[in-house]
Image (tube, rainbow, N blue to C red):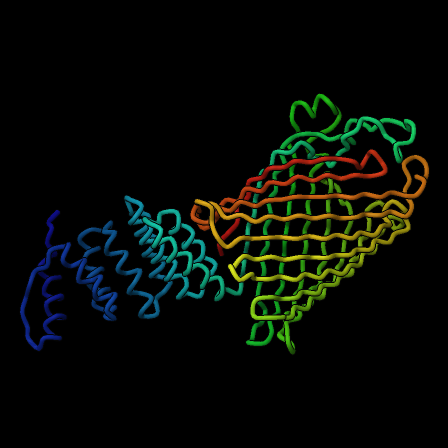
Length: 457
């Protein structure tokens, strides 16, 4: 194949260029020079010239990646964003190294944005991040993706994690079943004792912004969260009748949210309906209304007040239906050294015809997130204490004094913000939870380590 464009095509190029110079002459352009001129024309606001040059290059070589890249930039400038996107996709397919794929993926993302297809644009920005050549380009593309998320009425977030655990079922540490350390009442069944294994979680949340102004926003959202368990060989030996699916759970929810700026603060209302499944079977359907008010106390400190009412309709019949109501207050601060500190006090009341589902709970949570990194890692620490009280509780017989649980949980999240793949960064979560109960079935200690992936946009 010749490395020079045909004479007829060269005459066309010369005529175009000569018109701007008020002269006429015929020239021949080497392929490489034609690509450079076409790219400069596309970037310099002369898309028609860029398109004609690129089309001529493609007549000579239908697999000219550079020509497709020029078309992906020039065609959206004349209102042909879809054609530009397809040209960019072809350039991506013809790319032979990471830098070429990065450049083409960004060009496809830009063309898709010009189409108004912001979700598709975001997906191509994720592909660009996979091939970004350095940190500067990674940061640039992350910023573009965050701006795209603001423009996009659709917002979709994915989460997934895997966590080895010594207690995947929330089982007891004790073989014996006792009340208030009274003489032996019985034994905990094998599946009521702590079983080791691995917990896998997957979640998706997608929302659509129905309307937004400077003062309000309305959106509808759907979320789905799945938990799956794989029992260890030791757990199978301990409880041979137990299956992995016995401890699976699924939560699906549809919600409507309304947020509004109000005097001296921000208020929102959220209405949600959904279903919880356990061990693949329906557990209960629910409806919930949540009200939130946030008020800035200073330039860096904010007070949050939240209240909710939830109705749970049990799959086992109305005698196990539950009505829950709760209040929560959070005070979030930004310290002078830019660390973040927050404290949350929460109260929840659960009422049911079933005495084992009627309870009250108090909890206090504190969280500290330093602003600085330690090497490649950034971390946050949390501590929580909760008090759960059942006025009446029965296991075979009515337990004197009901049930009282006190749980202390310590946690640490370690984030690696500079380590990402397609916009997802790894987070290592460490937690230790100690629960003390007057009923040995609910006394347990749990140590978990989990690997999560969170999206930067």
